[in-house]
Image 1 (cartoon, one colour):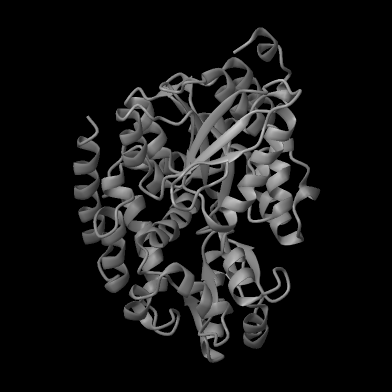
Image 2 (image 1 turned 120 degrees about the horizontal axis):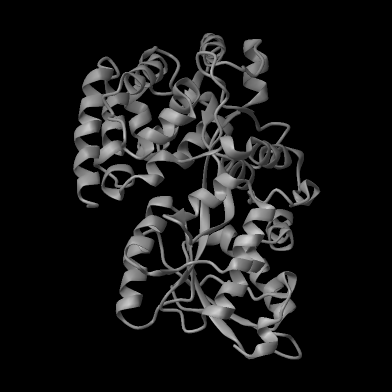
Length: 442
């Protein structure tokens, strides 16, 4: 990089996030002219597609307009670690990768694929983010990941009409939610649509209960497997979850029906043309499905309440996110690092916030950038949670345990949904699977 490039201020640095190519081919974002990074090009890889792709492109275009850098984005699909590994081996590594799972970020770092983020990026993170996001972006003493996009996974979505018909209001405690659920069921709808076919949704149910009931310290210990899944706190959380899974009428279609319901279908059962349930638990991204596929107006005929506190604990805030990392194999590391620094700015986050379908952990982002009051409230909840936010536990685990269909935690929680009568047995099976997966890391 030329000397003039290195003299750029934080707000003029280079971001090379390019347009997503649905077919996997790079799409180039125009750049050049009399701009500080004119003539520079970086490539970015990530999993985004569809509406997310289009909105991310607006961020890339903003970077190109500001700096003159050209950007190329290659879609990896969900199996990002395999794709990136192949590209590194083939000598065609991207400069920047948007990593959607903490466990994958840690895997990349342990494989020595990543470049620690520059002091200027670290300063931006210190200024604009709660400390917890720096912790989740770090491996050992080095900061490798900048969290650009977050997910708030502690939101329960509901049909206001269904709750009104049952004569209940959004609950603030888990036991109150069960009481409200029974009232909804008595009024003629099942209380909850549960996406049991997608095992990851069941991990999210467990994590919210566990974080509130057992507390952040135990949550961290379980996430690191420094306590076993047979710990009494795990059995207690499973038992609490089992009260919902086992009670007749609370789940649309019962356990059998839930196990054949994927995530989009669970949203359809609440917000589709023929509702079968009054509520569906999942992250802020439920709003996008309710709005885009079923024409629901968010905040009016599709609303949310925070996942309620359990047994007097603090209401949980579980999150996930996409972290920008720079590969050691990058052919243009300085420009790539400048791009990541741009992503750390409120300006970059504001572009996607205005487009919709986005929540930022950047505490300096003006909340007025969000296009509707509901999204604004979710984003504010995430930012105000500060260091009490906890990253999705299954995303921190080895993929063999926390992220693989038909095995590990996904399968065992499906088994528990099918028969929630023996929490201790499932806890033992979870520990066996976790121990095997964590041994595989050593």
